[in-house]
Image: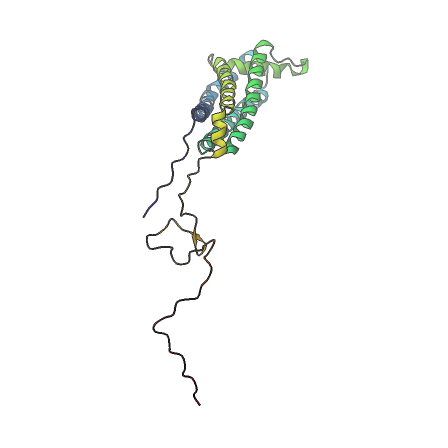
Length: 245
């Protein structure tokens, strides 16, 4: 005999919208990492060709900057995938109604906002005021200046769009989770409630539900009726005869 669990509380639209934005940002982070890896080979080749033609840098200096470019690309790809996994985990936690997932999302959103603003400011600063080094580092400055030009023409605008989208996405998610409906849902949780009769244990193990023939053997009762004398059995032995004078 089965007893279906009571339906879990319905997830509010604010939580579903926040989850959708988090998942979209996770997909975008993975796509950006893949695109970054895809353009690295051509970018390094164009950088090497430009550095050999336009600067007097030695092969060692060119290799050093090219290696730095590749290393930064791989590091950014790994961080992007880890960020995507973190966003997916937070989205699943919000769907499950865990209050800690909301706090974690706010922390990640604040960190993401800071990183997005810093990335956008760095991108704008590089285009507005190129890196200026001293005369002794002139060759290094020339090489670093060629790195930005080695990327495809569409790469810089895409980076700007990604940074702005990241900022807006985290703002939207943080705002959605402050709504009263989201707060009530995440405080109450979505764990299904069990009907009465559940919660008893047999030999320390949970019992799935009441049985039609009464409590199963070994049922632990939280309270018991007062003990009473058992009824006399018709098969009991007769009392011994009394001694007569």
